[in-house]
Image 1 (spheres, rainbow, N blue to C red):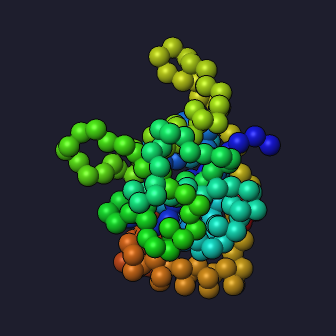
Image 2 (cartoon, rainbow, N blue to C red):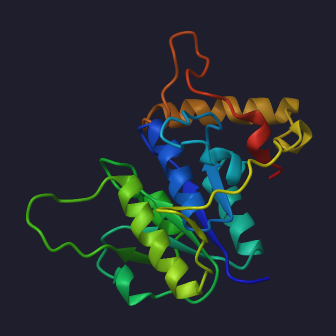
Length: 218
């Protein structure tokens, strides 16, 4: 199998950013978008791209880490750290999963622990301290695609051609709701409520779209 890229979504405060991330993921050849914690999100900004990217869900970062290591993936944190390398230096070695931090606080210590290395995006202007998480993801994913030699998509006029919308993945491919899974998710919701990961509506149910059929088994 050739080189692959993944995006790991954890602790992103603004739900609509996931839809925009999905759009960037499809544009730059991402194999799967991995959600950790809550499974529901708002697909605003995706422009239909959620039908063209595979989603996978894990209850914890540890589970996602184990899955990616079984795939022989490096995990790259997108964060300015003391040992971070500029993304335009293409410091990649093999298939890579990109972990992006919270829009306000960046990567937590727990998130940094599972990263094999870090990249940052050089800036040349003086007007902002950081980029929007979806903009940062697009830049990093583009650089990985260039390094990996992903083939450029064919063009149709002044835009890139879009594949026919695939059939939705069968519902049985979605995470099976066993009693243990329900208990684990409720625990995960309580833990994530304290750090702003996908807020809930007043009645305790998700106010964003629950895209059951998009997920593959974890």
